[in-house]
Structure formats: structure tokens, C-alpha cells
Length: 214
Ligand code: B16
Ligand code: MG
Image (tube, rainbow, N blue to C red; front, side, top):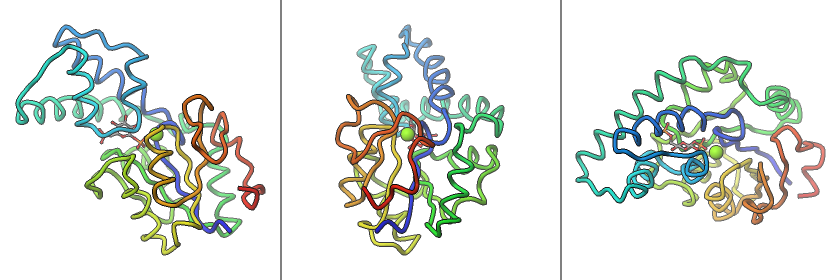
């Protein structure tokens, strides 16, 4: 019996991947690397530092830790500039109604995003009041596929992991949810998210009335 629903942010609630992409592309170009949309798929759901390492690996570039920190900060400053233009209209269709319906069905609702910028994005989207709790990248030490982020969300909601349902668009996120002992709805393609308990094309395609069938 599901008592809580936990949402990832990027790819589940809004497409921040686009803003990450243009910021990483800008940084990559400084090293003569052409970052493509296909490369960008590798950056989804993974931490900022891991994303930087993936970008640098494309150009066979190795840098000392301090330089990598500075580059990650530089990319993040651009990302923060870009996301300031996010408006509530960018939230995926049907998601605000779905969050409100979770409340009506007395399900607890959490956000669990690897992004350290997640609180600002949620504020810009105007939906902070629809979550009971939020866990972001500043509160964890291990990134997805480690289950830490989802276990912390469940703890904050005071619900046992087996009674939590996670919505995830990234393979690493699906693995993290299952490793936490939770059920998972994969948002995206079956080829990529085959391990999820159920797969939908878009977040709001999931019917909250079918919770007991999972
Ligand atoms: P930041 P999610 C993830 O968000 C993104 O998918 C991933 O591309 C990004 O590197 C990560 O957040 C960290 O973001 O640099 O803002 O801390 O899918 O977990 O909501
Ligand atoms: Mg995601």
C-alpha cells in the first residue's frame, strides 16, 4: 500500500536538462569540445562533478581537483543565470494537478533531486507549497544510483521505503529507487528504464487510481 510519492525534478517535473546542456556546451567549447544532445543524455541525473568529468573525458582532458572545482562553479553560475528565466508555464503538462491530487488522496509528497539548485527551480515554478518535504543535492553525500537521496526523503516523510513510489526519468535514478526498496515509475522509454516497475511516457500519464496495481 503506497503512502508516499517521491518526485525527481529534472525530466519528471520540468526540463532543466536543456539549461544544463547549454551551460555544459558553453564550458565544453572553451576546451574545443563539441557537446551534442546525445552526449547530454549521459549527464542526466548524475552529479555536477560527475557531469564535468564526463565532459572532460570527451576531450581526453585531465585536470587537478582544484581546477575542476573552479570549472564546475563556472558552469553553475551560467546555469543559475539561465534558470532565472524559468516560468511556471514550463512545468510539464498535468503535473501541478497530479501533485494536488496526491494531496487529495492523502499521499505524502516529496521532491528528491540531485540538483543543488532544486529549491530555486521549484520556487520559480510556483509549486513549493505542493510538497511536504524536499531533498536536494546539498543534503546528500552519495549521488544516484546510491539510494541515499530517496531514503532521506522517506525518513523526512516518516514513511517506510516499501510504501514509497518514486518517479524517475534517469536510469541511475531508477536504480537508486529500487536499491532503496521502493517502487518506481520510469518516465521515458522502456529501452532505457526497463528496470522500473511501470513505464509512462510523461509523468502525468500515470493514473494515481492504479497505485494498488504496482
Ligand atoms: P546541479 P535531477 C540532476 O537533477 C540533473 O538531471 C543532472 O543533469 C545534474 O547534473 C544534477 O541534477 C546536479 O545539478 O548542478 O544543479 O546541482 O534529475 O536529480 O532532478
Ligand atoms: Mg531526472
